[in-house]
Length: 116
Image 1: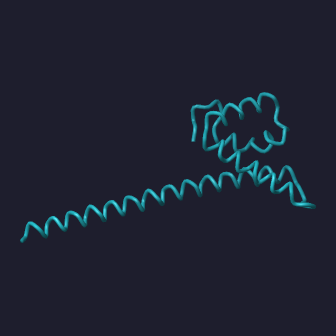
Image 2 (image 1 turned 45 degrees about the vertical axis):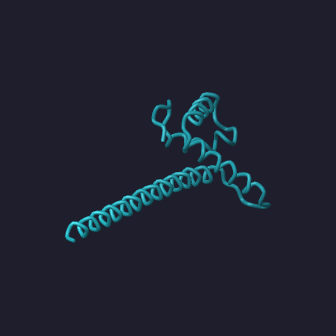
Image 3 (image 1 turned 90 degrees about the vertical axis):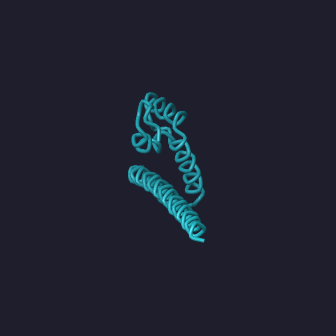
């Protein structure tokens, strides 16, 4: 996540729905746009949001509640972000375990050769 932008990723996640729907002020649009240019993770989440909204719009007679939808969107985007982070940590932990096991196997094989 980018922390060098004028606004944080959490603020962008809160604003992305009104930004996409055209309800944000000029200043808010400029801040969100600037952040999206500099933050690949938020850019990816925004792209996913746009696709999900296009799919949602294609479903006829789907009730819409903008205020609740924006709250749910921010929550869903944070949940997705947390799941992505958890998956990354899991992969790193598994890699560390495999690396440790490989090292231990090599060391134990080396000990066996010295005893001969």
